[in-house]
Length: 387
Image (cartoon, one colour):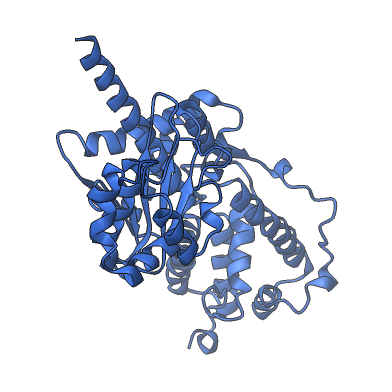
């Protein structure tokens, strides 16, 4: 009974290590579109062409273990990769990640530095015992794949070993050091909760199943949801921006599109100065928020924010266009002030507690300054400007 319990514990520890390795790989790589676990080996990351970027075999040992050429851990891994070689391309990386050690003098000590010919020779030179008989695993795994040496060498060229891997606690700490966790600062409790959520994602996926897969978009969404559950919103106020080195002199901006659009509806320097103050601070604030944000969808959310502000401008202009007894300039000015005084549209409210008074106003002028799309935000209601 004691041996059964020990084997069950060893299996459980291996699963935990496997899942943590998978989480670390998924967080550190961006080029994959799908991850499959236990489908083509332990972990396979697949690109948008259906080819594998990485194929990872994960081996965890509760006791100290030396990795040798003639052992099953090494040869079965090589044989498995050879059998699915059509799923690889020239960029595929094959990695055996193991807690086993490779001591000085072990033929595998410099394996990752060898070319395919030297790797093949290393296996050949370590096939037999001292009495000249073949090791059992050489006969079981190597003989059958050695019939096609050229294709075997293609696999060997891709094959690297990461050995003496850290224990479960250390690899969990490595996960928490990835960039996705920086927003939690020194809060280990919050980091642990997110790691546990991601671990549970894989664990639940494999519950009562032999295989599991997830797309990158699904994983990213889960990461967003997990961080959102424990994240404190980042407070941004007017004093969050360092204004010491900001140039707000009107003469520095006289040729900017957003100033010309204000001139076009006959505004003067008082409005120019207010617009410049907001614009200059917002440019710095956008860059700062990009640094502070942990969102994997920052660019997409910024684009959504753009669209929301453009809609605010167009809806307000439509309302003001129908006002009676006002000139086109008066309608334009009235529309502008109404837009600037509008209720704030939240900017990434999942992450930021925005209490600034300048950001939305400055961002509207940022959009008005877009030279590639000059009509995206335009204040004028003069018919000739709206064509």
